[in-house]
Length: 230
Image (tube, rainbow, N blue to C red):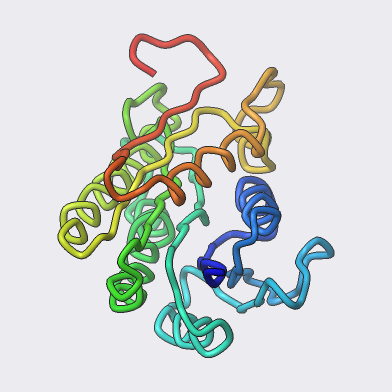
């Protein structure tokens, strides 16, 4: 019987991250969950889920990868889900606003993938999932335009990882949801209705992690609204 696969998952305490973690645990994965507070969620069993106090602005990706490998003996996937939004246009924003989103939405996932890369190569079927956004495919409004800049970069990161890891059996996917029923989306879009549920995005994340090497999907899109392309 093969050993359970192991994944790191950022932003695991709520929303998409919590839904993805619970789905993967139910499917038999072992998880190292990056949670800023370091507190264990009630749904995370001690035998299958490690908690690591991880802040995307604080670094420590190498320490996290090492801790996960010590606990589980292997590492097969990275799911970069943590994200932040600053609701400003590209004209009204300051550099600090863009820097914050680039640091959390792009730089931290790149560092995490970099730290995990040797383990993903050793897996032979390593996976990297970048939870981006449909804002990384189109600019829908002025007040989300700065956020779109960071998410376009996040999508590009997924493609870059896909190219870099291909010959080593590593497959990378950008998961790009539209409005999802999370605290962040409800805060940014009060009154929005019929949003995609986090559990549906979690299904796509699991799909990206479990497809064979010969069925690589570079991007997965999901939307709760009609659009020209997405």
